[in-house]
Length: 108
Length: 314
Image (cartoon, rainbow over all chains, first blue to last red; front, side, top):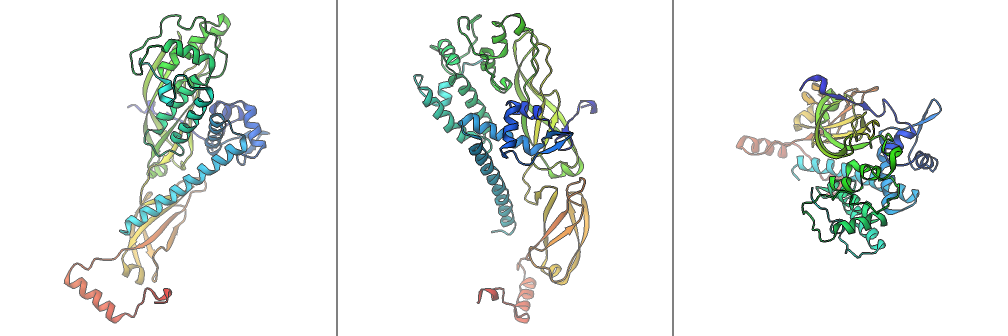
C-alpha cells in the first residue's frame, strides 16, 4: 500500500482534548464533564490557556463513568468506585500475568 | 438484513415490564462489559445488548418495534416497509452513536428515519458524525521503533441520501514511536460519517501491548527477564542480551542473586524523558543429564558447604 494511505493520528498527550471534545467522545454534555471534574472523580486535570485539558487516561475513565451512570443509573460517586475497581482489576491482572509467566519460565 | 429479536437478546418475555427489562440489561451489562468480562466476544455482545436496550427501554420505540415485529422471528430476512413508522412519534432523544449499532437498528431508528418526518429544517440540518472507539493490540517493539498497523473496523453509516450503508474498512495507521500502554491515538474525521454535509466524527484508537512473557511494562519503564547461568551470577560475567532496542552487552556483577535488577538508563520506551530498561536476572540451572554434569554437581555438593534453607531454620 502506498505510503500516502497510512493514517497518521495524534497521540493524546501530545495533543489534549478540550471539554467539548471529551464530552463528544463520551456522548455526554460538556456540563457532565465539568461536574465530574469538580467532584474529583475524573482525576487530575491540567489547565492550558485557562481551559481544562484531557488526555488518554481521562478519556478511558470518562467513558467508564458514563457507561456506569447510564447503564446502572448510579450516581457519579458509585460510578467512580466502579471505575476504581476496574482499574484495580486491570492492574492485578497485569501483575498476575507477569507472575504466571515468571513461574512458567521457572517451570513451576 | 436480518430481523433482530431484541427480547431474545435481553432474555426477557415480550410482555416484560420496564423494570424487568432494566434488570435484564444490567445483568448482561455486568456480564459482557469489555472492561470486566472474560467472554471472548464481550465487545460484540455488549453492543447487541446496548442496542436492544436502547429500543426496549424507550416506550415509543418499543411500541413501534413490537408492531413491526409481530410474527417475525430472529434471523429472518427483513426489510422495513416504506413509511413503516408513520403514525409513531419519536422523541428527539440522543441515540448516542448509532454507527456502533446494527444496520437493522439504524434502518428503523436512525437519523434518516427521523429526519424524513421532521420537516425541511431538520432534514437540512448539518450533523457531525459520532466519535468511534476501538482497541488495538501492538507489540512492545512498535513502541520502540514506531510501526504501521492495519486495523479492521466494521460499522454502519448513513450516506448523503440518508440510506444506511454497512461498511467494512481496513485502515493503515501509523503507530508513533514512544506510545505507552493504554494511550489513545486520535484520527480526525475517521469516525462516523456526518449527515447533511456535517463533518465526520473522530476515531480514537486505544493502544495496548500484546502480552509477552519476556517483558513487563510500567509507563515507559520496561522490565525484561534475563536467564543467567549460576557461574555467571556467582563469578560475574559480560553477557549479550537481545532487548527491544537491540542487542546490548551487560556486566553481571559477581555475587548476583536471583531477581537482581540491572538498570539500563534510557533504554525503556523512547520519549522525553525516555523510560529505563530493567534487566531482571533469573538463575537458570543446567540439567544434570550426563555423567559429567552429575559429577560436577556431586563435586559442588561435596566441596561447597551450602544450605539454601538456612533462613528457614533448617
